[in-house]
Image 1 (cartoon, rainbow, N blue to C red):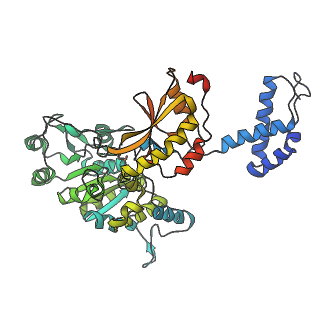
Image 2: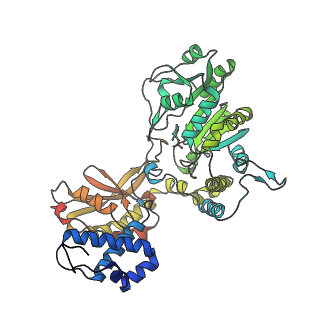
Image 3: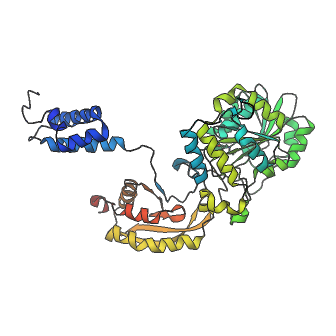
Length: 465
Ligand SMILES: *Cc1c(COP(=O)(O)O)cnc(C)c1O
């Protein structure tokens, strides 16, 4: 017992024997509860003050354990206006893919097992034929993500050799994926051709030589150069490179498998188009427009894919059985394009009609208005959703949402509201624009869940001024 604070605090055993203590042991285990009680008692000791009841210590310990027990990776309401938000996990996985992933987790599976021959099989086999069917490519391989796909391609075809890229395509993608740095790590020497806004056939022609390992075409997915511009059409580039016996690699980024035009969006280059244009290899992501789990695909010529698979790096970049199962199930959905919008959540959100979103906003505006009280006005507004993850960066999709504007003059009110929304049991992520907090409702599926969640909103009245 602490000499400075005798008899004011209950013993650990005493706390453990309270009703709350006993049920806590059931939930969290003896060891964790003892530790939490010790922590609460240690804090009470340093704080001093009046005596503390055993029951109160047990309750504090349970609160502590509940906070610790809450998953760090947890669901949010993505009302940010960006559908494929990299920081919020990009694509939502389709139900058949979730079921396939769960099964692969729970059971032993034919990951690298050839059932007919009773021999060792190849893990890529499960998705290779699907990728070929959907892209028209001869062969395909799958790795951890598209960054890994690009790294593997560069290292396989251009290690110790030159890789030619237009200066207009030397992209940086969020999270430190910079083409020049990836090149260096892959052992390829970057040869930049043309200028930022204009690259011509003759620029590529002058750079092609003995040391060229590949010509890389990068889909400038997160920006666009406009005005006085020139670039070389993929077909012309392929023709030129092939005349020098050099392969052309097209990094498509989002790489959709279907024409988005049919869902009311602007056309984004499809993988099949890039293959048809003659690219020898095409790389693209699994969790962008494709709507599957994180993955990187390379589709293209059989002998080049074989070289990728023979690179020891492939082993370090491969995907696990869980994702492979989800990828297979996701790709299978593409065999029935008519039902794709209903079955692929990402596409469903992207194709959601504005009128539908607006009607939802009209229903929710009075509810949120009442919860926020006098401090904010809540209005239904038109807004523009972004696809996100670099797809069609300048093509917003008309949407609708709720704009919360502080009635008072306190500059802190918006930040306080934004924080309070993020601190809800299910964090609500909006964005601040034009001195108002905007909740774009395009990605809101569980409307009732949002309302129940908002009911526990607590605003810091000091900040509202
Ligand atoms: C997104 C993107 C990448 C990186 O893909 P990840 O799947 O995020 O690793 C590479 N290149 C382009 C053009 C991209 O848009």
